[in-house]
Length: 158
Image (tube, rainbow, N blue to C red; front, side, top):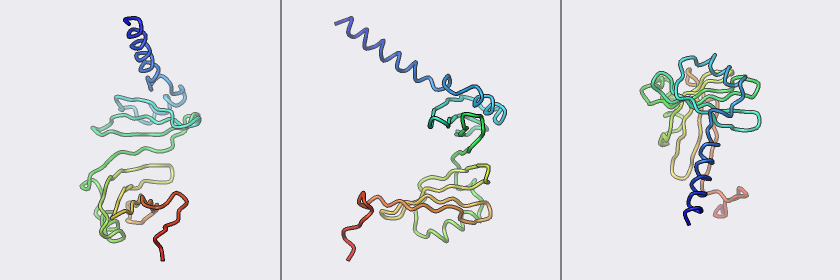
C-alpha cells in the first residue's frame, strides 16, 4: 500500500513539474518578450497552439497577457481595466449602442492593428463581445446566444 501511495504521489509530482510553463517557450519567443516587456515580473508561459505562445505576467501593478508567434513576432497584449480607466467617449458609445446590457468584463487590448477596449456584455440570454476604439467607434461586435440549439435553429419561432 505504501508503494502505491508513493507511486501515485511521484506521478502527481512529475505531472506538476512537467507543467512548468516557463520552460516550454522557444528562446526566440522569450527574447522577443523580454525586449518588449523589460519590466515584466512573474512570467509564466502557456502554449496556445503549435505556432503561438501566451505569456501571463505582472507589469505596472496589473496582470497582463501577451501572445507571440514561435518566430518571436508579437500578436497581442491585453489586461483588465475598470470603468474609471476607460475614456468617457468609449463608455458613451457602449451605453448608447448597447442600452440595457450589463458589463461582465472590460479589457484593454493592443495589436499591430491598433488599441481597443473590449467588453463582455449581456442582456437577458444574449451575450456579446464588443470592441471599441479610443474614438468611440465600434470595431467588433460578436453576438453569442446561450439558448440557441447547436444547429443554430430556434424551435419557438412562429
